[in-house]
Length: 90
Image (cartoon, rainbow, N blue to C red; front, side, top):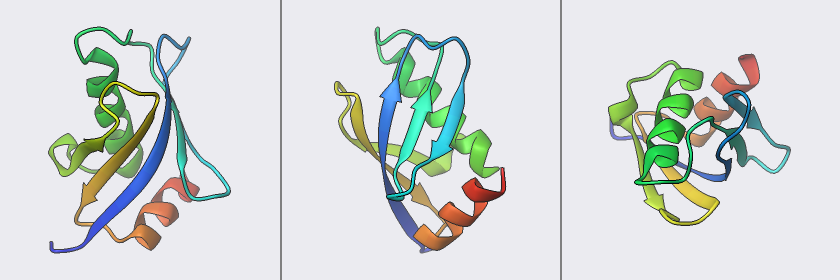
């Protein structure tokens, strides 16, 4: 499991429902219901992306943008192409 993919994310907290959308440029638009307080939106982001990819949340790490809407996630065990393919399916 040495493959690692990084993906840019635009996070929208306090959304009506949780969604993960693959954008044309390869980045993600993610909406979560959690507020951006005490890291709750970041935790919800990691869980939502892991669920969308069908992997354990422990394989998804926030590596950049902890306090910003623009973030970078690192996904262990997937290549960038595999990540896009899994998100395009669902």
